[in-house]
Image 1 (cartoon, rainbow, N blue to C red):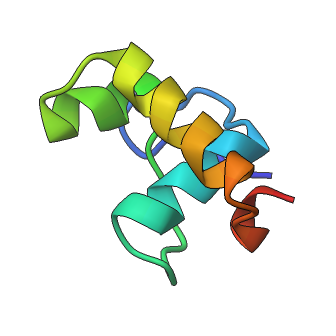
Image 2 (cartoon, rainbow, N blue to C red; image 1 turned 120 degrees about the vertical axis):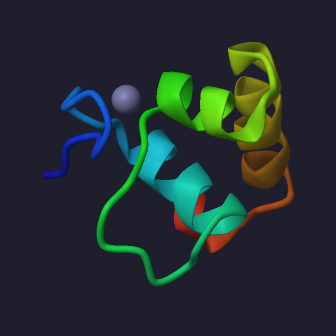
Length: 63
Ligand SMILES: [Zn+2]
């Protein structure tokens, strides 16, 4: 169980996984998709695409 360190939203496993994949693999605090997209200055849909991409290549963080 984890909450976004920015907005306290309850995090989905995908959100934790993409944060670890994109930002810091050993992170113990995470950002939700919305806060992560702001941090990275991209649209939330870009984050969704990255999640789909990493899942499609079988990244173990997304299992
Ligand atoms: Zn957030």
